[in-house]
Length: 432
Image (cartoon, rainbow, N blue to C red; front, side, top):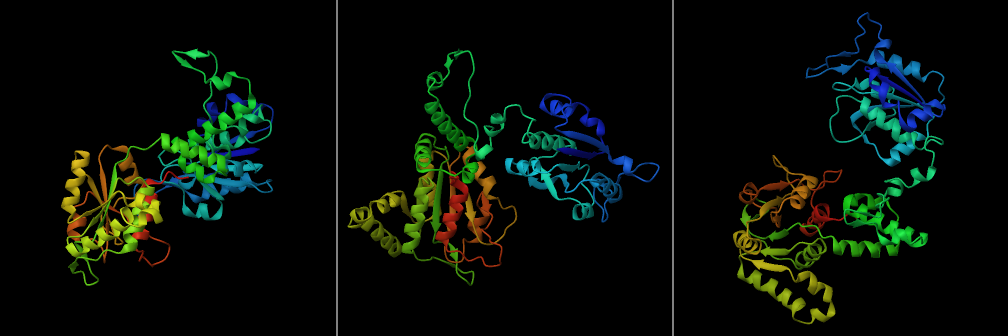
């Protein structure tokens, strides 16, 4: 593999590749890493590589002329070079991306700097933009070093033991199992007994389960990429039951006060499907209570008859799982009554999140709200509106307003039960 790194700080790499497997691979000509100073491709006497952006703004951009000249010269003699640009706007570096990069013989890496590079360089020369994480570095040299190290591991001869690569974390999209070495007992903590048996079949089974468990606990998103069999699913179910997240979440379906299509405040009617479908979603995602809010007594009686059918009547035998889903459903006359009930349960008033199909200022995203729900020790109540949505008074008095669900087209008219299911999955899914 030939790496050609284009940078304005060539001295950065003097020590980076001077040790470990990268150094050995270079000494044995398995890797060829050359560092190229971008200033050497400037045609002015001051060797200026940057300039101010058109249209104003802070910072400087790398100029297109020296970059274009450098890339063209570095490409010379290569049949199919890959040109990479380190950039916070790039795709996130992953094991799959690293494998793709390792399939090329000639790789040119442009180290981004300042506010970035002239956009025309991306359009004319760059094959892929790569980011190594959602944070800011002083320059792309750090990312270039990571790309070289990670991708070169897949080159034959760089790593002495090829099993080390195939067993690495993220290979097969799983984190690695726990590992131990001597002494057998350290500060009262012993090596798992199964690792001392010498039974390699049992050890392999244990390691696979521990890798699954480790991935579920630390990076459950990775499980979407893994091909799981029935035994894996069964084991993960036991892991789920043992490791319950500590969030305290409630939801409410608000029938008053809501708007009609003329933006008049009304009280909407209960729908049988909303009661059942949202209750099932709430049970699936670990919601503690599902509140139906409606001040109209006739509507409350209607909802109670539905509940009685499934909780006490013939429905209990016909569909026991429906009874289980409806066990946490509570009928309330007002939002204030709902808040008081949650405060009695939790000992503190919940933080309130409203949902709406419209855009507002200072809305919160799903990832951020999920983090807050999981991280703090505060109960959370999520409100779903009926009719044409929650009134402004309710929305303006909430702690958070959740960003609306949106596809790639203009249509945005999901039923409340569909929207509730999607939102609960985004906020509370364990990603299996």
